[in-house]
Each structure stands twice: as C-alpha cells, then as structure tokens.
Image 1 (tube, helix red, strand yellow):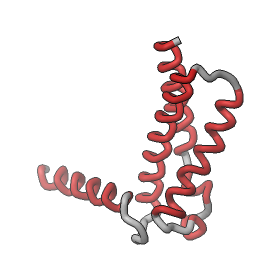
Image 2 (spheres, rainbow, N blue to C red):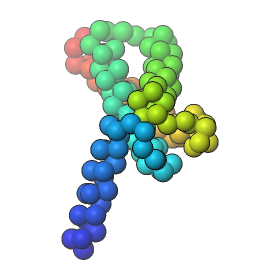
Image 3 (cartoon, helix red, strand yellow):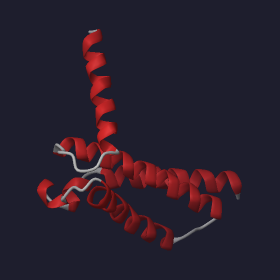
Length: 117
C-alpha cells in the first residue's frame, strides 16, 4: 500500500521535472496532464489580472480564449519542442482542458473583481 503511494509521488515528480525539460519523449496522457495544469495556471493568473484591473465584457472572454490556445501551444512547441501533429493535433492536445480553464478563469476574474471593486 505504501509502495504504490510512493510510486505515484515519484511518477508525479518526474512528470513535473519533464514539464521543465526540453526535447523529451512524451506520452499523450502525460502531455495532456501538463497542458491541463498550464491552462489552469494561465486561466487563474489572467482572470486575477482582469479582476484587479476591473476589466469587463466580451473583449475579456475573446482575449482569454485566444490566449488559452496560443500560450499552451507556444509552451509545448517552443519550450518543450513537441510537435502537436504527433499527438493528433492542437485540439487533441488541448482536449477538455479549455472548459476547466474557462471555469477557473471566470471564478478568478469574478472573485477578484468582486473583492476589489
């Protein structure tokens, strides 16, 4: 029982080490996990910034959705050196992360905006 927990922790640690190392081999599920967390972190950061600045309206959503595709795509192509076509294309790598990221963005944006303004 303790061994499986340790194995999971080691696996998680190696995944995060891979997330900051260029030109490694990736399994599709590993890449999608890392991209998921990149999207969530980007979403919370951008939502907090928009809330702090008091921004409102549709331009915020449009810029968020443009950024949520461009930032992770730049991360895996330029930083990690991964070709998304090897994993089924950009939308396959992004997968279901966009919906969760949008929820995190909206919660951060509304929460920070409500606290400050």
